[in-house]
Length: 186
Image 1 (cartoon, rainbow, N blue to C red):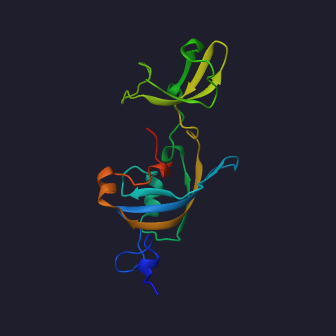
Image 2 (cartoon, one colour):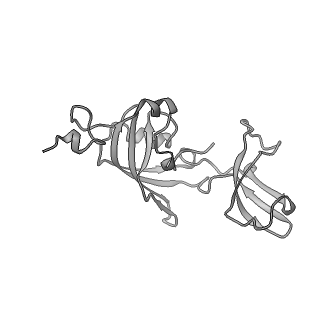
Image 3 (cartoon, rainbow, N blue to C red):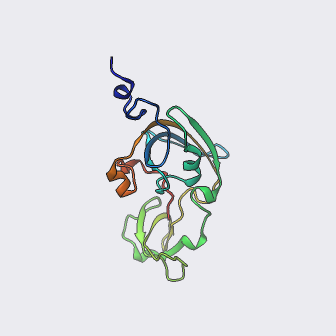
């Protein structure tokens, strides 16, 4: 019969003891995110994986609540906008001439664009904009996260905990980059 550490490599340390979430551990979560009215719901199809320890892979409030938890633990939090995707910033809304865009542009498409000079963007880095409306003469772009300005309910169950590899620590991110859906956007 295999030892506990052989049968559960993502849940135990080298001595077979249950791992708890702490600095430089990779955590796998099953996540449900909802608005306060139940009108919006997002459940992960595959586990969300992040590097624990202040690396910015998950909301800081969630990371703090998960500190010291083990596999099987559940956490439910109410996230205010400042704890999640931030307040809605009207300066990140742009109305551009339709002539600047190719045929076929439609709501829901995402494009990368430079911030406007008057947008008070300290980083002055390109932003990802979502096309929210297309009219005959204008296109409306919004760089806010779709959930910006919303208080959210965050529920998760810890599915796995393991020590981070040195590469993950050096890269400040868990190996599975496809599952970093909860990273706060700049």
